[in-house]
Length: 221
Length: 221
Figure 1 (cartoon, rainbow over the protein chains, first blue to last red):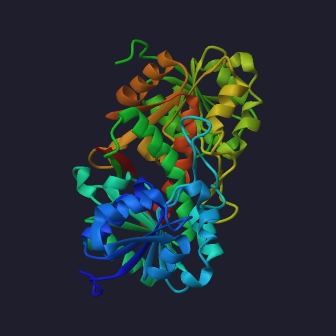
Figure 2: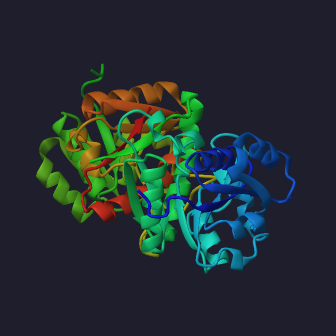
Figure 3: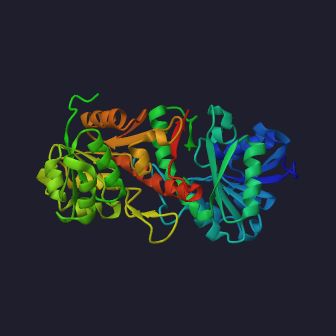
């Protein structure tokens, strides 16, 4: 288990992913501040009301300043614009766990990506906040599976990408000890965020066919 | 088993993938013509010598005209240029099984793609040869696994994408009855070739880490 059992955590984003992550973190005993564009966001207010004394809300900058660890759960196609509302010093030296996917559904299925191939959202965030320790993870599964991998039966894998080895050790602990992941595969530096982001349109197509979000991939060898 | 047990098949490309596919097809009893830019290609000549009376060689156009089914095993980043050497009438009405990946390793690992996201090599080939029945498949595994999936233990999946339902039924038979695949997932029309092509840089990174090409993914649900 983690040596720091009780943390202050910022969760950027008020959508399904942000709510799932933030609620799980409160259940684990952490103090969680949900950030959005405005300090009085209605969805964040509803989340705070439902999650009790350890839940709070604020702007993106408020949530980032509050957190010892920060989760990016904003809509990926708008993440950079949203994150620019966080002053860089609020992320300096911090672990930033990037879960977002830069998806564009405007052309129908399968979705396309607003950045890919020679770059990725994970890399953009690391470049925008060079003082942060960005780790891309969890973006390859549905948000309920992220925090409860046993929703998918049997063995399956989650991936992480990042430049900072200590940050990835910390993320491995979060994934295993907090969320229950059994197999965590370190893909390499933050450039490998491209790989997991480029898999997500594939995921979306499989989801559309199966009509069930509780699936994942396993590397068989 | 297939109703047509004995076929004439064209294999475009003389590299590792072309050789593996063509050799397997000869072993299955088919007549196979390997095509390249020139009728006297040295690698094709060596392949013919090693594979006996059912093996022959020719230009891309020769091999395409010869085949009742045609496999595209050219280097994906140059496939369209190579395939333009095939006169379109040589592919009209035929099943074209596209195995190629448009990879660019010039920037190091992970590789990038020369086409992706809003288009794919599979789609380009279908557009270039509207009279062909293009099915994308097998590009997500190493060439030895393509024709011998039991090199990877346990359950794992292969995918196919294409516009023509009858052609996909035929490909399912080829994958199962000829090559031994147990699980074949139909992803949808040829646009879904994007999804499997965009997975391949991920595959390449996993290969680099594992130093063993005998792996694959399984969809766990």
